[in-house]
Length: 284
Image 1 (spheres, helix red, strand yellow):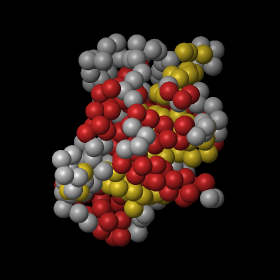
Image 2 (cartoon, rainbow, N blue to C red; image 1 turned 90 degrees about the vertical axis):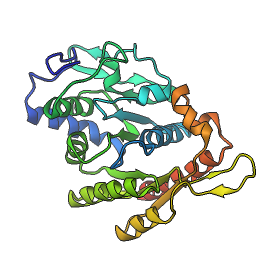
Image 3 (cartoon, rainbow, N blue to C red; image 1 turned 30 degrees about the vertical axis):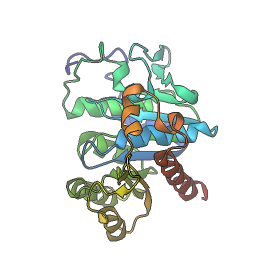
């Protein structure tokens, strides 16, 4: 999809201030907004975002997930939702409904608006930012307990836009213990703090694994880096999610690991992480 190929659902005719007014109205109906970010790709950020959303929905909370990765959307693949589904449009209101996913999860992604899964979205920054505003302001999210926003890696267009548009959001940073990943994660934390956004904490993903033969725990990367980042930036370490082959396969199979492998070490660690997040947000 090129910049000239704008989806049928578009806001070209609307003024910027009207868009942002719609965003404000929409966001006021949502109790908690969580932005899941990382500085580097490949750290499992989308896996964390999806399982966070499903964990919350599994206990009866009203949850939505927004895939903010405009050029590389893969949330619906990891949720097992068909890309052939298209948002239902309210033509009079010029708004549209997110797709209903598992456990009544409300899902919106650029993947619903492309013709095929292989079609690239070849857009520059302004087009991507228009889409982000559209997803936030013109989607009919309704009243939710949580909205989880899965962002692309880095500190550029989509990340900057989300941090500007949702002032009361809570930022969750995901990183592996790898030094390169932590370098970028630290920049992302710093960006959020510069923009005066609440950094809820950091999650260490793929922190290590148990040998399938002898059962010994093995660190995949030198330990301690995420703890140091937590201390340096005065933010909580929300949890450590171990590496398990079943979890890595979950994304391709389209079923979140917390549902498919409820007794796994990763699921247990993730549930403890979600418990901490809920305590930090809901105790208010």
